[in-house]
Length: 258
Image (tube, rainbow, N blue to C red; front, side, top):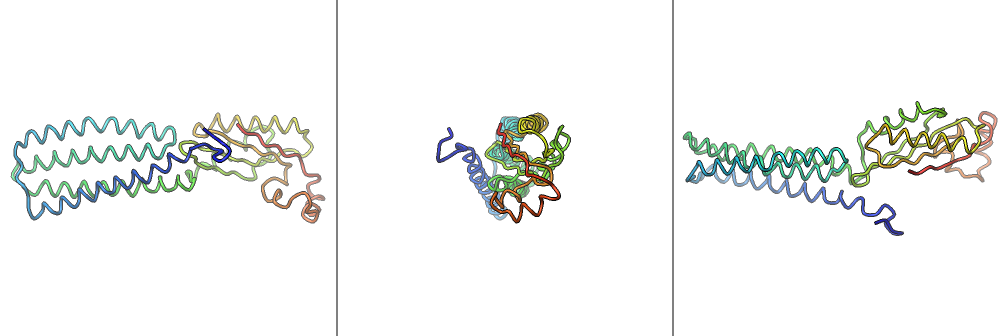
């Protein structure tokens, strides 16, 4: 739960699990590769090949569907850790396949088949590590897809009463995605009218972009929208006077959280 110290609760605790899973997957890939290289020079004899093959098939069938579902749900809720855990589970399935192909190769008279297949699987695992690492470490830095800010901007640009969108910032927090948007409206509007536009902009964001968990909409007068103007503060008359002839009075600001 949220508290005074952790205002967003433990949302990023999930992101901390991602690197641990990546490390465990990488360790599995290195171990498979090491064992495969070792067996190239000393291929062990495999007894009861049919038992090994059956066990490998059962291992793959029992892992693969569950891991695919886990990855699908992870993508739907925006959980990089759950997606990575799905990849981790698929490593077990790939290992089972390696055992199966290796056993078949040995049965056909190719004793090195087990080691060669193991090296191929090890390469696949390490490639999975590289791909998942990009997502996991991006989430640790609050990263989102490069198309997400543009999607949020386009939604608000077609919202009634919005004359422009000055700034859009989107961040990830665990499996949640949060947006902050600065919109520009008619400077002659009353505060209540600006509030209505902000409510509509907020609704449109969450209705059209299902991956958003919440959005904060900040309202300014057209021509004076964006954090650039707020950083100068009310007391900076020089900055205000440079815009007063062109844009008139500064409009009211309103923050609307979901």
